[in-house]
Image (cartoon, rainbow, N blue to C red; front, side):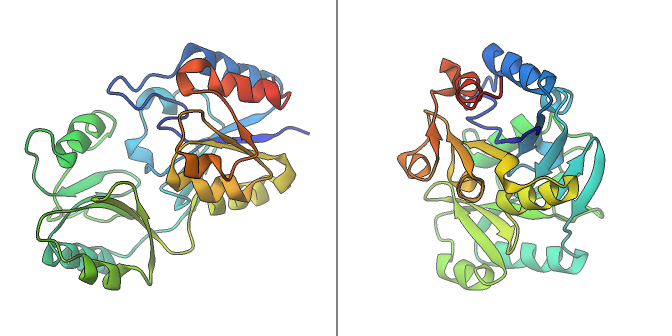
Length: 263
């Protein structure tokens, strides 16, 4: 039976530095897995428009994007959970009121409300992700403003208590740093994306393997029977995985696929 292999992007498929490179050993291992009849998927917190072009062109069998809010198989949409226009406008207004700066993430484009001063999170988002999208990054006043999830930054003077009260009921809050928080509609995660895609393909959970390194990978790593933590992962992540492989730059993906006799 062919396996379904789900890979996080940052720190798993590509390096976390400014080069964002896929190691050659990873590239070769993925091709060999496909040659052996296994299906390979990106499973990411990024929305589709924020995925590097070379990854979209690599030959993955499908995509789980935006922490399970959008799913594609062989280039065709399988599932898409959308927020309404009114919801998006309301949430943006609340975040502005609470003093947060935010990247609003839609399948096809990103919207930013925040400062772009040198070295800021928003400058990084704009400079990195603007080269991926077919559409320019816009502000929240754009007529096409709508999004699936968002990532927000607590600033000096932000009302953190009000933010928590406003969003914790309907959203899952995933802290990445003391200031940066990824916010996903409740009921959706990388794990739900795996479940939906496995059901769609008629595969069992036993056929599923997940590879990740960060806190927003933990649900999928705990969900599948075969989970791999990259050597560069935080200890919190490594505590929940079945197998710990080497660092991304030390042929970690290749080692894990060899370990499971997938290549």
